Amino acid sequence: MKGFFWMIAFAFVVSCQKETRNEMKLDGEWQLQHIETYSYDNNVEIAMTDSVLTGTMNLMRTKGIYNDVVFTGWSPFPYSQLNWNTSARKMLVITFHTDGTPGASLFNYSFNIEKHSLNQLVLADYLADDDLNLVKKTLYYFKK
Image (cartoon, rainbow, N blue to C red; front, side, top):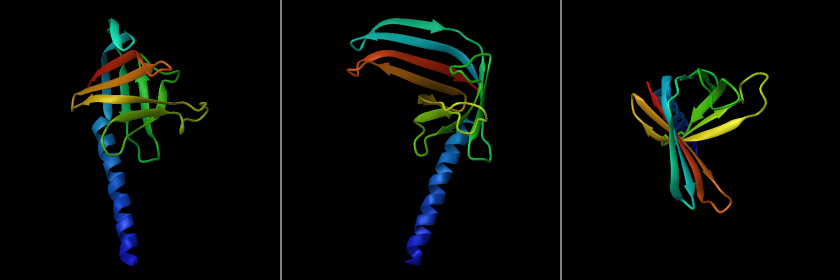
């Protein structure tokens, strides 16, 4: 029975470390390069716009419960300072939220992580209709 509890404790520590490793990979200042927006009709692409914007997304890991993010020069949200976290096992999703932000109403939004390397990050946002047909896809391209 004692070994069982040690095994559970070990599994918990390992799972926490995976989340920390993913957060370490995203930690830093990311420069927004451009935003591509695709429009669809019945899952068929009908239009694409490419917007060149300048701004930064500074993802900072903290020792507290929540990590901090500051958007400078642009913001996809009504807040320029939020908290963030990423998925623990595979780095598939990054979530921005106001859980640890004093004075902010509750806000939560997630992006898919389409591509990640040491110097590049691509975040994606998808919008579908009631029949789950793709209506809009937005890709955010960042460089470190």
